[in-house]
Image (cartoon, rainbow, N blue to C red; front, side, top):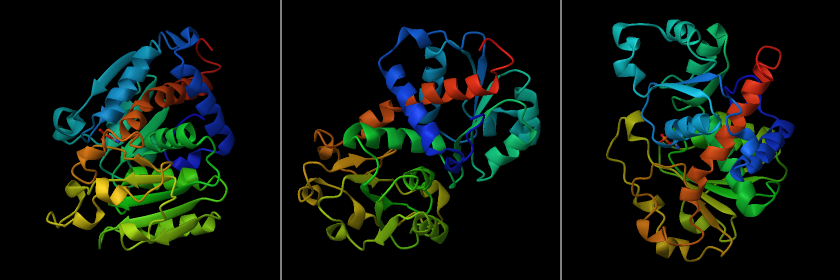
Length: 308
Ligand code: CP
């Protein structure tokens, strides 16, 4: 694997190898400390981020690579002066051995890839994809359920704009016997192309009109926030899709709550102490999965060129 642009770039074999490596990274094996010494990696973010940028930057430093970073490239970079994304990539690839890009355009990573001479990781593109989040979500599912085959998951909230949902769906569809329940509010339903993707990959998508239609035995509830920054109607009522203690009480002791975060009020904070609320652990899984991802891509891309 030399880049990660879309979740479809990954196959089962690559994911399994990445997760085994992430397990080793999680055990803090000394072998990987300083393993990327001499490389420099750039994080180029045109949209706000806490988890993705800082977990990438932590992973980069844990691997011993150097870091150059622009956290608000839209305002503080030369995009503000009218520089194209292509030119920015052409410049940064002279300073860094890998570029991790978050951008407001859905096709930004494909555009970057066309001109790039260094690996590109898509760390979130518009309302399209967010493959590193999809990977850490899948790693979390594997951590709590052991096998990913035969998973049932309810995805809830802004299914139209949640790029993390779109990436996770594509990754889940690589596995056997996946059932996805969808609960959203009017206008923010899962786009038809993802419904067709699920149906075309031997998985099931079942639309639910309320929480009560989600089976109480579902393995995971994956809640998302309404992406106010991407929608015109800022006054949507989300009352019917808020997960609170009362609504969660009928679910199994083996139903886990996930959320890519940040959350607003779609998961009430009184659920935070429930051992089935795994969203903070999920966010922390960003470190081993990103360490494994960066290491694997750099190793593959530079195998004949640098110290591998
Ligand atoms: N989950 C996620 O992408 O969070 P950030 O926007 O904070 O990176």
